[in-house]
Image (cartoon, rainbow, N blue to C red; front, side):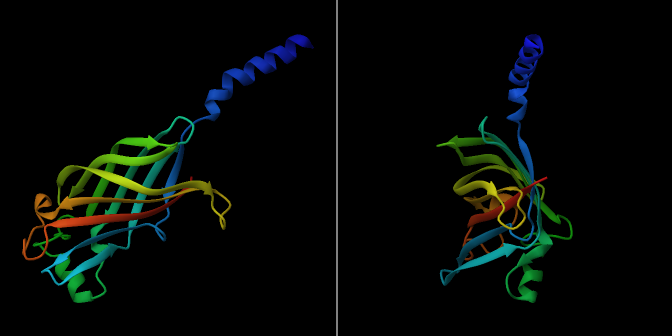
Length: 189
């Protein structure tokens, strides 16, 4: 009996690290919205968003590792005005007929105080890929109150130059610097 108990104890010790594995979370498209803002001819800051985002986040709290893989449907741009949506999707800006999606793929996630604080990665818009760093302003890993499943929520921000992504029409009158804010929720798969 002692040998059996010893074997069970040893077995549980050897399998313990396996419990500390990363979890893959599917993006909740009904609560994940990349938003972007820019200066409009010195008159105002315009705030627009994309309504369709998919992808995954892999997260291991104990090991403090993570990765992010996001795809944005560029045709889902929402300006609040149908004609302006079509204008933004045109060749001068997103050219969604030729480039219907944008992607973000993390290359490194930096942790501080046990949580992601910066996400380095590659942003691809109009087939142009540039490195960006997202500053994580909020992060939580908890049970979803309605679905009763492990979930994560985050907010992050970065700035890019739209001319670097071949979307610089009317710059500098319409600001070249674009602030991107991401609200993200994801549920364990």
